[in-house]
Figure 1 (cartoon, rainbow, N blue to C red):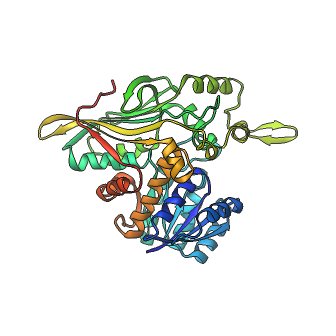
Figure 2 (figure 1 turned 45 degrees about the horizontal axis):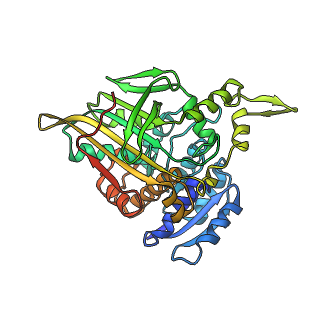
Figure 3 (figure 1 turned 90 degrees about the vertical axis):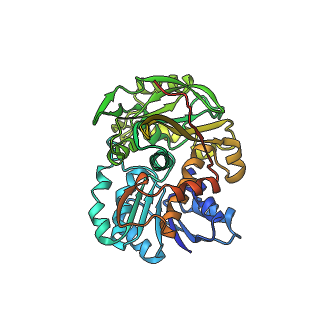
Length: 399
């Protein structure tokens, strides 16, 4: 079918690369590009011998001109941005200059300001439209699959969706006192920022982790979860007409919260540079360096994740509730691709999103979020490629 350029070689990229190689009918060739080429070479060695042709190259994803040069050499059908969110705009610029389709798994963040907004990427809408290429934003799980779940619910089960609660539960245990299941810097920036939710056309701001609920997750049980700001709220509020409230909750164990509070109290989660031994360092980046690499957690992690959406709305004049979710087992993920479930649930949708672009099932010039396309082919692919979903029409609701 074609060729993909994959930028990034962390835990999520590793899963996506494994899945691209499983899907060799679509991904005939892939090029893996990262600042650290040795990581790319390691994955290539593990997966060589299959039908997908793999090449590797060193790249600085902050360098637009180097990216343009690489894309012109590789000539991919799609660029899969699995690097850091700080690099979204440079990679989008390179795709625009070379007229190449683009996808990522998380919205752009300025490196020195904890801001989580789509405005910077949405500003490219007309440019991508005029160039005749597609940018698919947030093709992970949340954001990503959660947006597809919303589109699926809207298409098949509701005339109007009034309330959406997105629930992200990770009940995995890796045995460390404190570690994050994805990039520590991105993870800690996200959960130490102020929370927010959408209600009646407005953002309601909250203090970090100030709103707590307990939910009985299928196949996991009761877990404490906390309201966070999350990027898909912004796009769903724009694209799901008539929605009255959208909230996002994520589970955390008490030990994790206690350690995080201590680190905050001593300044280790700050992104403001400080002087140390004659050099400028960012405390959070130093903390990232001493914490366990999320990519190393797979062999240690046991338990399951449960991520999904609960809806309240109207169908044929009657109130309806609906819950759609995926359950993923950490040990099963490690057995298949050598990764824990958090990376797996992001890497699989990244491959599927790229597949939607390469096969033309999702293809329209411009910049789009996941819920703006027909959800059915993506939902079918979830079942085929390792993230089967379940439904309930009488779910426990979140108060």
